[in-house]
Amino acid sequence: MALALFHHFGRRSTSSSSRVFILPVIPPRSSHLHIHQMSTQSPTPVTPASALSELPQRVGEKTNRALAAGDALFFESSRTFQQCDGVDYQIRICPALLLKPTAPPPGVSVSDKRTDGSESPSPSQAGEVAQKKKEKKDVFAPPYVPNLHVLDVKADGGEEYVILLNKYMVVRNHFMLATKDFVPQTSPLFPADLLLARRILEAYKAQGTDLLCFFNCGEKSGASQPHKHIQFLPLDAEGCPIEKLAQSVHVDREDKPFSLSSLPYAHFLSRLRSLPRASSHPDALAAELGNRFMSLLDAQVDTYRRLPDAPRPPWSYNVLMTWDHLYLFPRSHESFTIAPEAGEGWQMPVNSLGYAGMLLVRREAELKGIETAGGVCAILSYIGFPKVEIPEESTLDNGFLAQ
Image (cartoon, rainbow, N blue to C red; front, side, top):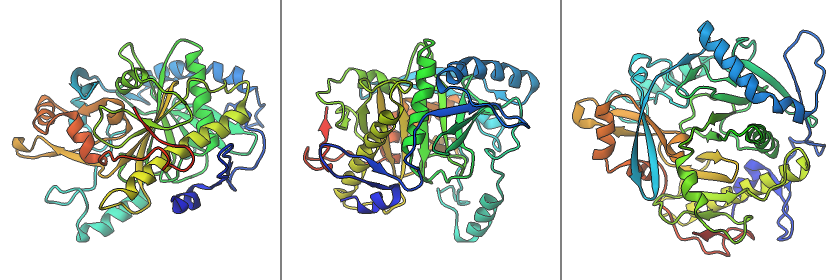
């Protein structure tokens, strides 16, 4: 069913009792991580637990220092709520989006548009757009701005990452995990990526803070940078809107993907509550996270097979990870035009945060434009795919449950 996907992502055993990733790019060695500070001398590795336990403090200190020095910018915003299909969506109004079109806040990309306002560049613009993208500086390549650089991370298997602050913050302490060497943002998440993301969630959880981890994969996902990176956003008392709905669902088996019946667009979840701690069983956790993520990709492919106009790969999708759930949302469009009655229309880019229940607009008129369009759920349905019925026995040996 998903042979093309397996070829793209890696190979995996199809045994119903055990499904293990076989990824040539990840040597079969221990997944323990060593973290070090950037230095002119050879770094001295420290244990993952002690290094990551200090990450929340380091991010906070770096954020304060970067904002004071002007190396990072914080954009004030106000927040309103819109209830739709069981989710209390948060909509932030951020006027800075109007003032800084060339340097948008985190997760907001400026879509390539035709002169008539449509989403794709015209043939005459295509060469210019391609050249601009080619010349675009890799913001995740060294040398790093010292006040934005938090940690370097290296796995025993050889995978190297860097943790950097987001230069443009709508929420304080917004940071990113990027591969040290260039890997395209169109590549999927590998077990090493997922394990490190889980470790970061665990470090914050231990100090009483919940993080939202998100990943924008593909040209239609709302990704603003071509270098592979995962983003982390501290959650306030309101939490993650879609997570509240997911928490209310009873799941018989956590290893099976499921969906939320009230949401009209295609999406897939896996519950992570019973997974072991990364610090105690890293290798087992990496394999299990990889299998859970693959099951969501399988469900995506199974959905495409049942659509009359199935999209061709490479596919775009958004990924969310909380402490309790892993989510995947297939994407059909990068943006949605709102507020056309204002005389301009705005191509509002939407990334993973939109599906988490957190959207950004520039002004009140665009907030009204969302209401005119039919609400947040209508927008998320347009930029995604319709939900289809997937038989339980369909998604390989994992099954699929609609809750």
